[in-house]
Length: 128
Image (tube, rainbow, N blue to C red):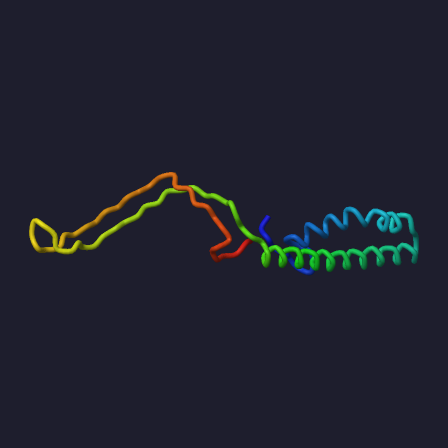
């Protein structure tokens, strides 16, 4: 999953993942109260459940914002390796050289396969 906070409505990103877990763990007793109640007590129990879920959405967004903000600001990348091919082209002219006092045109392309690149925290970019 990409480092996406989501929204305060907890309908996407990490905030949705956190909200879904909070709801799954914390709502059963409140849902049971709704299911067991009748009349005005049922209405009040449903309002309490709805209010709790609204609070869990805001809490989930707050937690996701803090976690992702901290990771993006403080993560260090080290020891990551990638592998690929390098194609280097060189073109231009030489200086005067034998057999005569005139320049020579040079056009070379070299390919090296299977080069390993090691990533460090020395570059620029963004973790996402």
